[in-house]
Image 1 (tube, one colour):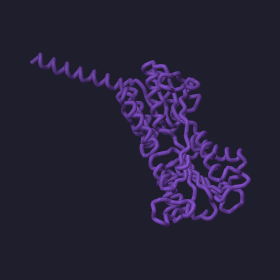
Image 2 (cartoon, rainbow, N blue to C red):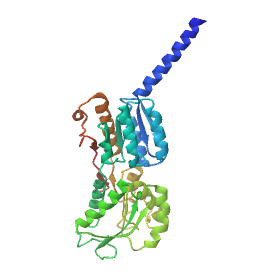
Image 3 (tube, one colour):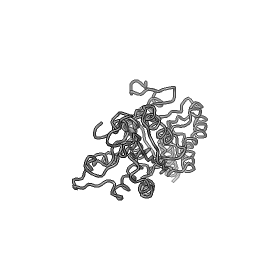
Image 4 (cartoon, rainbow, N blue to C red):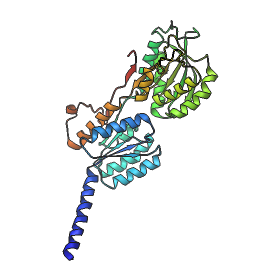
Length: 340
């Protein structure tokens, strides 16, 4: 009986130790909100690529910094090898970095960039993402092409022939770094290139398709026959606007061929950012004019490549990443449309 008891205790201890070792070998991914289609795609890519090298576990904060902090605290008690964090609030990175530093646990932040002064607190804190200002610049290049690349002689898409591009902007989130930079740089780039731009309204729709849809249903009739362009900080909001425009008969497939022909059918240019699968489908049907690809696949590859550099001591050059200023790995945006 004693031998059986000892055997059971040994098995329990073995299971416990194996569990601890498994937890310590895992890479944990913390996502701000899996309802965000781009973030979901990025998370899926990270998991798919990462599972070739490490056990992976993902946590969804449901857009709550409180929930995310609690989940991170619980995982830190397991002494994990590495944390990959898409913060709900970039300002929330500071206490996380300090805690991880005290435990010598490396962190890779993704998608939402912490403050530079916070990353500088810890040699093993990194950021993988794209520069938000670049997406605004590329959106501006798309607009320039659309209106004929001649600021003083706009083409037929200048509907009122006044030499000014009248636009509505659907903004991601007031005060959010990416939303602010994307909005700033598309306008400043066009202005620097001598285009005249009149912003009729900037509407904050919090990155959300359904919010943008409801906002657009109310907003667009107020500016009917005034706007010539819709700029969106991401594809989800652009798609919400398109849904509203279809309902308001601003897009009409008059010949029922499944494609909006901008030359012969009611149409307005809508430009997004992210390049999510649903946006690509809307481009193929002619509703969405263009997007700027926020390359989830390459960002995920760069994230896992950086994880291998950190955990296995691999030379960054062998996995084709460049660590800039000791903390950053940048992945370029790309323009995407039927004509790109």
